[in-house]
Length: 158
Image (tube, rainbow, N blue to C red; front, side, top):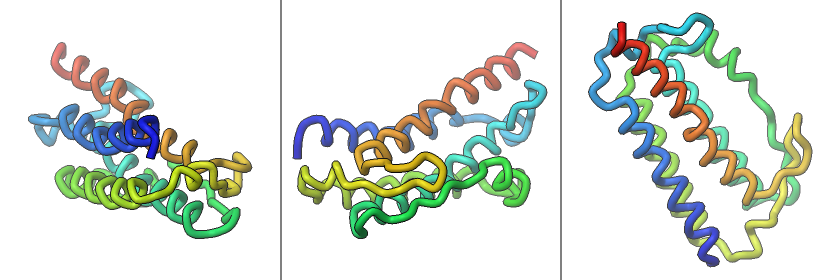
């Protein structure tokens, strides 16, 4: 396995830690607050990430195991609307993220370098490689961290 892929897998695992650190010691009222109009609460953000971890993992597994598999898109707003985000437990959500990433990292670590170019066909975005899917999963957490930080700063100042 190349250093690049080892580094990507390490970043992938580290994403769960970064998210856990971002929400550490936040009281429930802060997790549920929507201090910025039109933006999700911190708990909603964490639940969104937790809901899409298995989606990313499934896509990667399909690309690894199948020839040019179909990869279905998903509307995050429908998940938010329908999956009771404010009734969910932050510890369970974080544990799910860690568990999915741990399992997936173990799978990825065992792959030959040739597997990284394997492709699936996303229903909305077209062809996507395993390499790209892993980068997207890594970026998903890092994309949301600034929003959590913004909410924390707003709540601390008010």
